[in-house]
Length: 214
Length: 190
Image: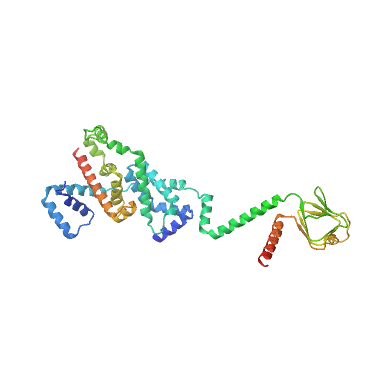
């Protein structure tokens, strides 16, 4: 053991290369004259030397392969979360459209049964809607999921959603003309989902516009 | 080097395995040496080095640009190695005195049963003796000694790795050296 704690600390500072030139000289002078410190110094020096002599060991060759094999695949969930974090505005917009899509889809599916605009003179027989001869409908008429027998008159637009007109009366002329006898406004046929959405959106926007512009 | 490293880390954060492969190439040697000297055998060293890199990959999002990468990696390796030793605890058990009135430990008994001092001198290289003695050190001293001598880190860098004040690192280094000195004197005497 060193003769006192101060010299022991000095020895360590010396090994850390933390002593000034003067401090080092002083320490060495002391070591020369003090047997205990000399022994302590030699023992510490030996530890220092042995530790410094430690050689690097060889790294196993399969180390990298093993690590790469253990890396987790970037999970879909995590990747999604990352994208949301990086682009919050786009994510919000996407989420909005997905919800819009789902709500219209649900709306569409809940409307699978037959429905039509209320009018007193119209007769329904199962899937069939009959507008009898001589009947006059003032305004627009909408039919969903039905076959329409058109014999009377419609003064407004006729909208057919997943519906078709079965014509009993024989008309000469082309397709368009066959309604002209009965419908004064436009005839809109919507058979496909996309068209239905478009139609719906158009109406929504129209009503929205009338709402904001009084 | 730093520029390239930042690029790689950016890629890894995006989930790029290849970029991480390059990081492994650069650091596996250092981390393996560190783990080997902390743990004292190849099996554990390999296990912990692998675990260190897997942890680094999975926690790469927590690595901030302002930090330095290699101290961060050394810290993961050190903590994992210490946890690993705590779970295994073979050295601590061996190091307990056999009976309270005896100074001899289990470790001494095993050694003295197996070989005579002469044989030990012949079969053991210098390297191995110091490694064995190193393993008997408390982990807080051992990590400082290994980082200082095996990895050649400065005291400042070690402080960064272990998240300790430089003063504490110095104290650990001094106590570690003293403990090694005493043990080496003992080994030589027997």
